[in-house]
Amino acid sequence: MAKRPSTVFVCQECGSQSPKWLGRCADCGAWNSLVEERAPSEDAGGGAAGAHRYAPAGASGGARLYSDIEIEQHARISTGIDEFDRVLGGGVVPGSLVLLGGEPGIGKSTLLLQAAANMARTAGAVLYSSGEESEHQIKSRGERLAVGRAPLYLLAETCLERILEEIARIRPALVIIDSVQTVFSLKFQSAPGSIGQVREAATQLLFTAKGQNIPTFLVGHITKDGSLAGPKALEHVVDTVLYFEGERHHSHRVVRAVKNRFGASSELGVFEMTSTGLRPVPNPSQMFLAERPVNAPGSAVLCSVEGSRPILVEVQALVSSSTYGNARRMASGIDQQRLTLLLAVLEKRAGLNLIGDDVFVNIAGGVTVDEPASDLGVVAAIASSVRNRVIPATTAMFGEVGLAGEVRGITQATLRVREAAQMGFRRCIMPAANIDPDARLKGSRSEEANIDPDACLPPSRQGRSGEPRPGSPGPQAVGGGSEGGGCELIGVRTVGEALDALLE
Image (cartoon, helix red, strand yellow):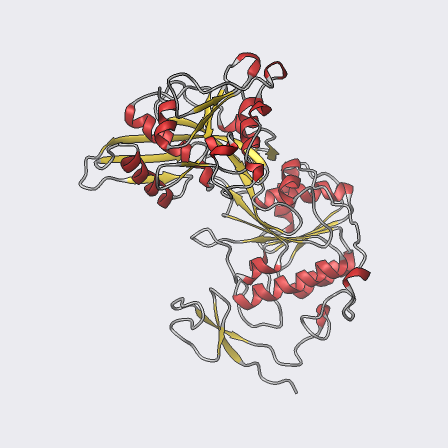
């Protein structure tokens, strides 16, 4: 006779279990986060997963010697969407488990349905299981996306055991679960979306994906603070974690990889939402700079890098006298605390008086930039607005700003300068450490951070690096000149030098 299921209290923040209810979790310290769940009895297992609910679907054996293991070379499967393949590292790896999170209505289901239709035409049958839409609703959306007669199986189901049975019956080339928070297991009596249910669903789907070599996509909900809902273990279990970002008032969407065992993390793909679905944007720099104002103070072009992709974005700043007692400092697209730090550096090291001014900084287009190399673009836009001076339209910049007012060298400088040159920019303000190796502190950056000054010059000008400009001992101009599409590199060591070079 089966034992009566015991009651446990599970923390919804960290997944910690307690035999009794506690007002505060003993492990993570979260208040009022313990929810009652009923643990299954010992003989309540079975079903599609086997005698034990955590039994892997594939064959298991003893330990093997490292040198005796042969690597199986499985070709990646293309999703048919270039930008999506880029974020995944070149395509979907067979047997991988991918988690895609994002705000409601951002386009997660649309993107995966497009990828499912493309892969169904090339790789074989695809199973799309939804716990949020009926089969008719999914097909109605598929007609708009021109899915056609691809071998795409639709399943409106939330029971985990039933989903596993369909996977075993169809043997698809790809499985999509939309979403993992709606899936529940009969072994647990808690509601779908709880810590136990999400952990059980992710674990069983992981064993199925690895054991049967079926790539699986999981759609995940996010909380009010933007993090993925459910236990943190969910992100540890999966192979790849993707975030779908974007503003509701903008047509573009961004897919960002924050974890990828089979590719580069922090990789980024840009899409445009249209009436027929998501369209890849091969040149995001052109899109983000398309509506840049001309001769407007407070506007600067920043060379940013996301993963292995250089992207030019516009940094906008507006500084005005405060009409209230306390000046306001607001940021959109950059970290608020980073903005406060840079304002302090401008006041202390560059001599700008911002105490009684409101400061507003925005990354145009709704994109988010979180790398230190964006510091120079932010301070340049703020100084341009304060002094009411226009930064030349053909000037781009990048660099990290330290608390002493120094401009520190950064990595991947070559990618940034090449992207600026390809977009028609004639001058690039950058850290002197990335141009002159002798100006670098020993061990401050890897050698890959330094670039060849001739790298961004046309062939007719290569090998003719210029000398420092007369009367300007600070900034170092290398390869000066704009003929033939060359990009003049201006190396700066301090914020003051950078502002003098930008606002001269």
